[in-house]
Image (cartoon, rainbow, N blue to C red; front, side):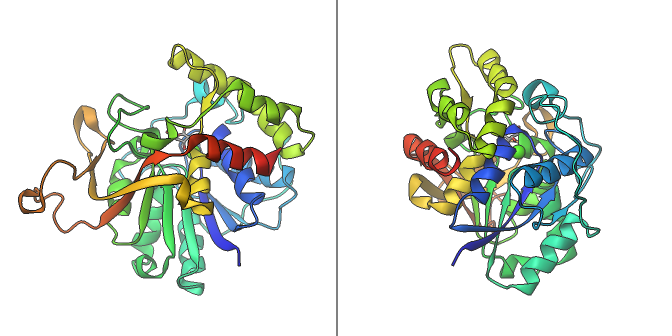
Length: 316
Ligand code: BDR
Ligand code: CA
């Protein structure tokens, strides 16, 4: 039976790829999209989620609008230089005809998990605000969720939003620290692996050559995003595959190598948003901040070519 997932998302070019990848994967049953600020403001994230479902012919899937701001303080603003002014590579998409449901994202998440204990997997691919708010609303979701598989964080490597921090975690470190500490099964698919998954222009050409409408949308929104990566990383060709890597983990965890560590998120100073796994200390000298924290399943290795082929096989 297909695994029921809720994707919490800030679409976003790579979010669009991830959503389409999930929709085209028979192993998954996408029962809702919830939206959050990050790559764009939440209103535009919601508009984009609706547009993407229209392109995919899946307006049967509900979209629930989420938080406009992080738990502590206002949203610092979108990243048009990465994802375009519209979050979709400046593709100038028409306005959607469909509308979000009236229920806020956190309430939708709670209702779905409590109605189907042990069945729902959360796949957050944006800042973790909605997930922390859902835990606040109903802490028992921690016992009733099947699994949380999130894109975010950097365990043993530098960040991308800052030298210290990855963008999703940097956008709401307080929420991330709650999510990593909630005592539910969490897998972190962070930059440790997504920076190993490089879709080259040759890989991307498959999307451009396909007449599938989802592949065509991807091919249309990629150029702006790719140009950012190539400016930011001299010598790089193509893009890193962030959000689709979380979808790939849910479909086939054997693509990844993982380690289990208690993990804290820095909320202060220049390292704000850095995810710190308890690496390098034995259990008897574990500092208090990491003690009594549950282990997080952290992805540290990936079979990148197999992942890229899996996604292209579904979408081209
Ligand atoms: C994450 O930040 C966003 O730009 C992407 O959509 C992805 O979720 C990568 O750090
Ligand atoms: Ca995202």
